[in-house]
Image (cartoon, rainbow, N blue to C red; front, side, top):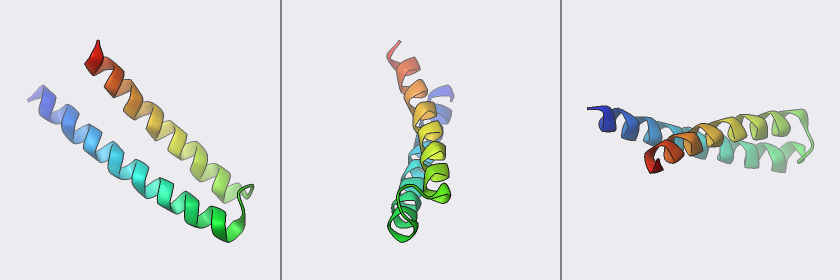
Length: 61
C-alpha cells in the first residue's frame, strides 16, 4: 500500500508540474519572461519539481 501511495503522489506531482509548466509558457509568451506572473509560476514549478526529485531520491536510497 505504501508504494501505491508513492506512485499516486508521483503521478499527481507530474500532472501538476505539466500543468504549471504549460501555464508558465503561455503566460511568458503573453506577458513576457520577466513578468511577475511568469516568475511566480516559475517559482511554483521549481517547488513542485523539488518535491518530485525528493521522492525519487528517497526511492533510490
